[in-house]
Image 1 (spheres, helix red, strand yellow):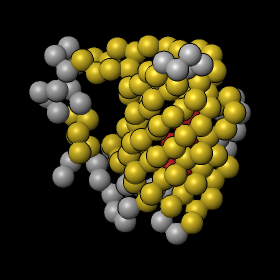
Image 2 (image 1 turned 120 degrees about the vertical axis):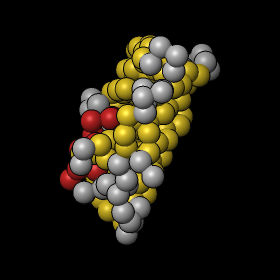
Image 3 (image 1 turned 60 degrees about the vertical axis):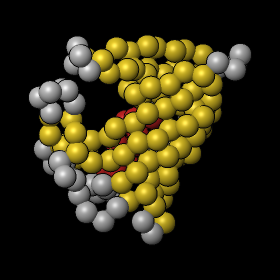
Length: 139
């Protein structure tokens, strides 16, 4: 992974074979990002995405393998217990034009990734909401 900071923006380029979520988290830890927004595109060969079932308070994940375009990555950086916490969603286009998406658990870069992290001045934690089971913003 390569990353470079331009003012309040961190540009991240994961290398082929690297796991995207891990590399974004590592870049945020390296650059001490505590609060920010994330956007990106790229190409992957493996993705695990999911849907949170609020009534059951659990994630259901689907795994996809094969060449896919990461057509949209969006999310944020916050903290839980003083550590980097990522919340990412992604859409992936298949070779036949189908698109799948959801909460991003993992993705392996096959071509490249082009990720921009807009760093906000400050920090924000999260807490587990008992009603939904989700880690929500602690505003």
